[in-house]
Image (cartoon, rainbow, N blue to C red):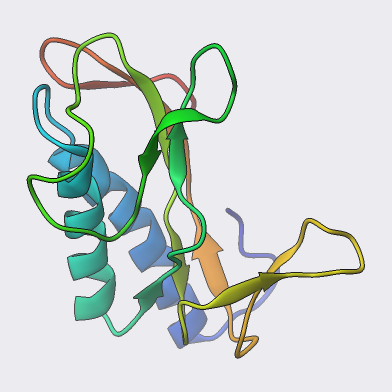
Length: 140
């Protein structure tokens, strides 16, 4: 995630809060915790700062397939979802929005994700290995 050129204070806050959400999600991910713990922590922080969290896209496990289980939702309820165990590899990649959480994929390229209200979004991502003591970042 990069800001190119000049931006507004509100857009910079969006970028900063999105990065904070990634790290708050990391802190919530504990061995033998639950995927829902991650989403709950991210959603609370985004909402507290006046932003929404996309619900149609999520982090994911990395295994035999690149997009594998578990789905790592960036909203949710503590104590729910898949159990996090040592040896798991997964991403946390919250997409935080200035307006609505609802999105669509641009039909022109079949890839670009746009919010329904077309307000700005920010996203940060890392891939992690869950160890016996917590997360190890595999991407920098």
